[in-house]
Length: 79
Image 1 (cartoon, rainbow, N blue to C red):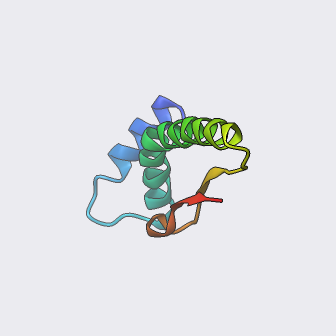
Image 2: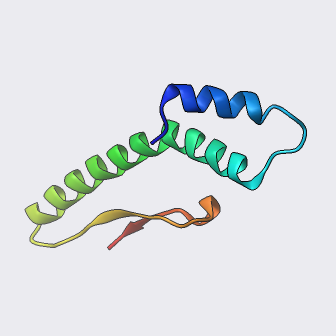
């Protein structure tokens, strides 16, 4: 989402005691970019295995990531 130069610039600008809302938002995106792709990949692998195992016993099932703007409300859903 943001290139390395923009990240460095933001980190330098945000190192002051007072951070603007835009700077905080950018920092949240930088941090999210570090863990979010791995989380999505892991949930996808779990879903594929879950679906295959349930298909073997004649059932259907799905595992998905319920995303929310508030990270505390992220959840793994099993349907």
